[in-house]
Amino acid sequence: MKMEVDGNEAVLDLDLLELPEVPASALKSNAALLESLFDQWLSLPESNRLITTLLNEAKLKNETLNNLSNLSSKGLPPLSPKCTPSPTSLNRPATPRIDLCNNMKAASDDNIRQFYFEHGRPAPQEMIEECRFKIYELFNDYGEEAGHLMHMKEFKFVTKEVCDLPSFFSKVLFRKINNNENHAYLTKDAFYDYWINKNLMTCDKATKIYTLLKKPELDYLTHDDFNPVLYELLETHPGLEFLKNTPDFQERYAETVIYKIFYYVNRSGNGRITLRELKRYGKTLIDAMDQVDEEDDINRVLRFFSYEQFYSTYCQFWELDSDNNFLIEKESLIRYGNHALTYRIVDRIFTEIPRKFTSKVEGRMSYEDFVYFVTAEEDKLAEPSLEYWLKCIDLDGDEVLTRHELQFFYEEQLHRMECLGLEPIYFEDILCMMFDMINPKNEGYITLRDLKGSKSSGHFFNTLFNLTKFLKVKVF
Image (cartoon, rainbow, N blue to C red; front, side):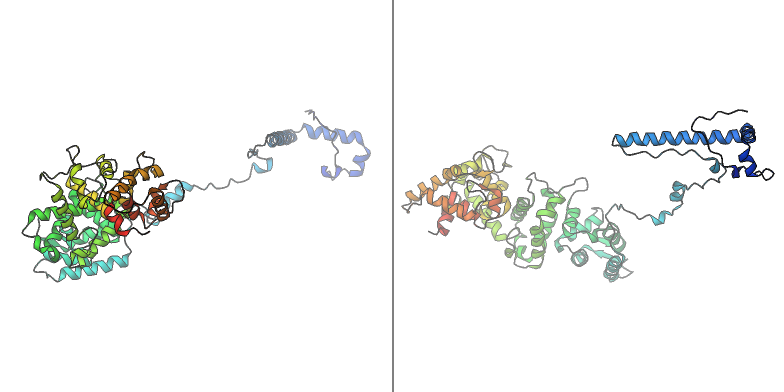
């Protein structure tokens, strides 16, 4: 068989022929014999296959090098070249394949850590055991003959000591565990299942209160959700014992407390307190609940539960409600605080721009609206109050207070001082004083952030529309 090989002339190493019967020196001196032997070797089938394989490998390597060169010239990363098995690797034993999927399936499920828990991540085992011991100890005091059943009256101690909640939450918690059924007793196992297995023991206090008060089908708190705990407070607190024979005033007191709770906590103003709002704005409320549970004098818990504050608010409303229809009109609100407010600020309140009235009668303020107004007027440094009064003064709705808007409201104050025979304080002087009080970031206007950052924001607003309070503290 004759084979043609393209390319440069090959140089043959005679020693590699390994012909023991023919010396290498004889082959070198006899070119004809050498060529004859080479032709015979080329004619062998094994030689033909070997040369063909070597040629194919050489061509493939040349093509791969050309492709890599082209990719590099285009700025692209090279791909991994496919390998063609060499003759020496054809008989090589195959490397065993590693099946990752089977190896993963072979792993035990016990080794995979749980990352989702329906009721949140469970408490450490030590905490669970400690709580379990406390629960069993409390319930075992009632003996096996009583079935380890605890009456609702004795449950207050568990509510306070085990659950870290105010004692006036005991009825709500008791009924929640009993699925709102009117059972007089509670079992040890039912309490353990609700409090530990549902993981309430590890929740923060805001989450506990939210979970106990809200309706199961809702994801927010409404006014009605606070009634059970407030009526239990009215029944059990020594500072409210005198109201037991006056259910009407009990109802008004509970309403007032609820309106104040929503004033401070429900910043969206939609009548729905979410868990996020309760966690973010409810710390003062939760602290007040704890305080009123410990304090016999309820009037010392000023922001929410003070009976004296309720009494003052309700009496003021009653005096201004001249026709006793439980609604207040604009002309009646002018008389608030012995005519302390200007007409212009009362007009702005009744535009309902700072807050839309809940009254269904146009141009009339309900008792709830009045509670919001009085709270804003008496606690001007609270963030909801600052937002309320800024909306009143902000005539163009751009959320900043300018010289023009300040002058518009102060003009009536100046006129009232002149009518009362007081030495007038002109606007240019008062403007400098007000900007000094607030120290705004921008000298041309005052923002809500500026007001929140100043301890004199209350006096700032009194200067504009409450003459009585302005005259009490003005210093020149």
